[in-house]
Image (cartoon, rainbow, N blue to C red; front, side, top):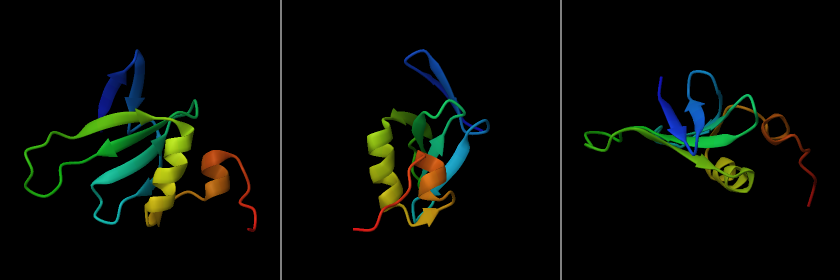
Length: 86
């Protein structure tokens, strides 16, 4: 569990829904119960970088989702919109 307060709001990986993950499993996209989005950056390999969270906008969350191959939640459930044909 990772918890962090960002701009007066508590973001918690345990209380939020995992939406997608990067191929190497070091970056994860989460959504809170109040439909806010954040990224969780794990410690990559033997790095000394401490795991941290970053609050992001819905627009950035959509871009991140599109770049992550491990999509746990379908687009329409994560963002509340249907995917349309081009």
